[in-house]
Structure formats: structure tokens, C-alpha cells
Amino acid sequence: GAGVSQSPSNKVTEKGKDVELRCDPISGHTALYWYRQSLGQGLEFLIYFQGNSAPDKSGLPSDRFSAERTGGSVSTLTIQRTQQEDSAVYLCASGTSGSTDTQYFGPGTRLTVL
Amino acid sequence: GENVEQHPSTLSVQEGDSAVIKCTYSDSASNYFPWYKQELGKRPQLIIDIRSNVGEKKDQRIAVTLNKTAKHFSLHITETQPEDSAVYFCAATTPVRFGAGTRLTVKP
Image 1 (cartoon, chains in turn purple, yellow):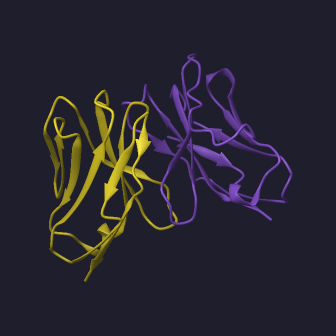
Image 2: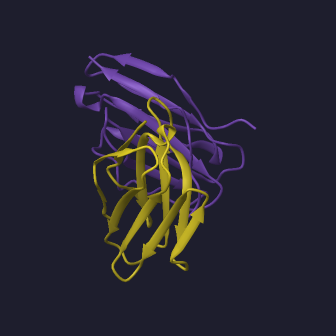
């Protein structure tokens, strides 16, 4: 079946502009995660959605970052007033249930802020 | 929240040797410990996981051990092959946090 998809695959933007990154999880998966991976670095947790529960936003680095998940499916990560240090690959993952379950990762969106 | 430390950051072995990567965690409530493999330019993929009610799990050449008392868990790869070369990430819940990764290089 279809895996996790993300769009765009690449995004180049100018400092100060807002960007929206999209994640389409595997159908039926109730858990959805966003991570940031800088070049050659680890997976930095950003936010976690589980069903209809309030999202765990504890990993968002600043108030410029926000995420929504509409209808328990598609999620959008928004970065306002982008900075050069926001440049990274943004990975989305989904899972069938809670945090104690396999995460299936999307291909990521490579964001470059000039 | 959970804090996961992973060692070593880089590991180089000869083909056929074993490789061991270790992680420690801080939250005693964590009960799920997955390991992911990320090949260059690709997305992370789960290779093995362990839950807190068992101490060891094996799948062919890979195994994971868990010591809940000491709050550490390890990945063991035996008979390493060049295709095992990748970055390996450990993780612990709750909520999920990843280690910084170990870059494993298997020399033919």
C-alpha cells in the first residue's frame, strides 16, 4: 500500500518568508510525528499527534513553528518568518497507535532558507 | 521529559566482525525501545524493537538487549556486512526521543 508522503520534496525560501510543509500519513494511522534532521545530525522531535488528543508540542523550538492535523489525517507544519538555522530536512512519520509502535517515515522535505 | 544518549557516534568494523551500539535513557516510565537504520539519503526504517517486559530480542544477525534497572539498551549486529553501513538511531518513550545516532562503517 501507499506509504507516508510529504510535499514538497524540496523547498527553497528567503529569510523572513513563511513556509508550509505537508504530510500525508498512511491511511488509518492515528499517530503522526514531525522531526527535524539537520545535515549529518540526529532526529529532533518537534510535535506528536495521537487521535483526537491534544498534540504534544514540547519539541517545537520556537513560537514560529506550528502544526495542524485536519480530520485526523493530513498534517501541515508551518514555519513563520523563516531563519537560516531552520534549514534542514523535515521528516514526518505515522503509526497505527500510540508512541509504543513502529513509526513509518516519509521521504522528508528538504528546506533551504537563503 | 526523556533524554536518550547514544554511543559511540561513529563505529568502524571489518566485515564479519560484530558491532555494538549502546544507549541510555533517563525516564524510568519508558517502556518501548526501537532501533532505526538510516542509509545515506534515505528515510529511517525500523530494524528491531524491544518492550520493557523482555530482556533480549533477536532477529537473525541483529539483537537488542535491555537492562531496565540500569536504564540502558544495546544493539548487537553479528557477522557484519558492507550493506550494514548506515546511521543507526535508538529511541525511547515516553514521549519518543531519539539518540544522536551512530554512523557504522563496515569495511570489506
